[in-house]
Image (cartoon, rainbow, N blue to C red):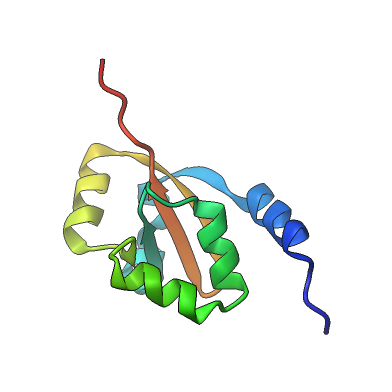
Length: 104
């Protein structure tokens, strides 16, 4: 099966990205499937690298702690604050990124 051109994959991932309450993702967190993406990175670019199995890029982000498993503390904070986060599924993972808080 031929690979999709990168631009098609990015477009598909962009369409599959949604803002969702963290509470709706609890079962994925409980099964260890949620991956946190730092706001320093573009969620779609990270999802694309995961979908293409770009091991060297993903390992680089992991080494820099820009991509990590969602921690228990982070999950509790999001749950307690009833936040919405950006998410996109790249099976078996659910990649999530919080919305930067704007302070006045």
